[in-house]
Image (cartoon, rainbow, N blue to C red; front, side, top):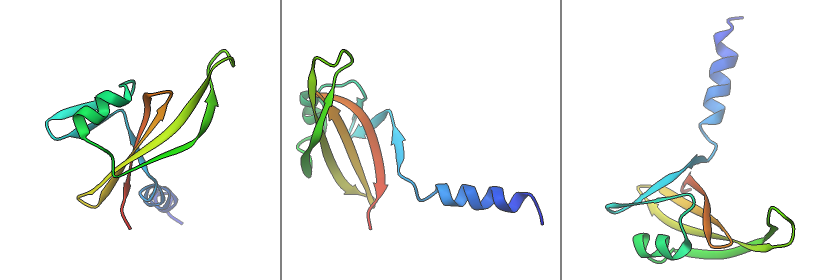
Length: 98
């Protein structure tokens, strides 16, 4: 058996996973992890969907932050899912629409 086949199978399997990025383009503007929610909304407009998904503790366990996800799209067949912790953008994920 050729050793390249298992590697190719693994690579093709990863193609179906969601991608993560540190920046996202909104028209002529860029939003980046660390941006505040109002900055993202000013640059990208109101999200298509907006959900509170839970709460998390801060680094010193004395603060509790709301976890919120905003969804933009689909644009060219892709959704952009932005996660905010305590009003700060912490993750940008893209997924192909089904």
